[in-house]
Length: 122
Image 1 (cartoon, helix red, strand yellow):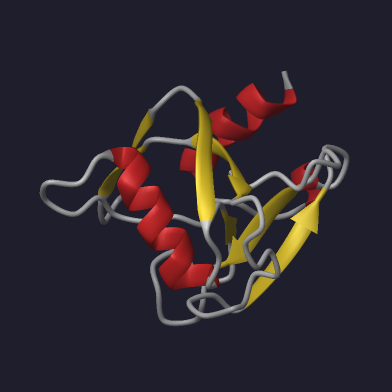
Image 2 (cartoon, rainbow, N blue to C red):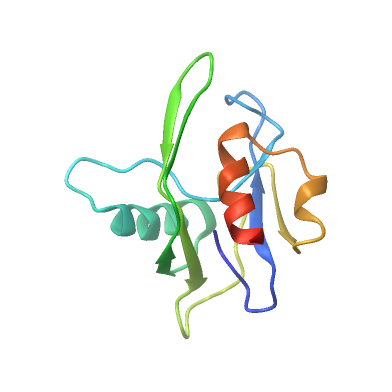
C-alpha cells in the first residue's frame, strides 16, 4: 500500500485480459524464489510503476481463495524512496489513482483486499 503522506493510497486498475480485470488493487506482485517479501515489493514497484519504494510497517497477511486461484497477500505500508522519482507510471495496469479514506470504499476491489483496507481504515 503506497501512501503519499497526505492520507491517500495509490490504487492500480487491473488491465483487460487479466484475472479480476477492471478491479482496483494495491500495486505489488509475486515473490520470486529466494526473495524476501520486502525485496519483492521493491522490485515489483520498480517494474510496475517505475519508482523506487521503501517498505515500511507490515500489515496482516491475507490468504484468499478465488474459484481459479488462491492468493496470499503480504501487505506493507510503503512510501516512495527519499529523493527518488515519485511520479508513478502506468506500466502494468490500465490506470492509477490516489484515493482517500473516504473514496476507497467507492472503488471495486478484489475480495482479498477487503481485510487490508479494513486494517488501514482502523
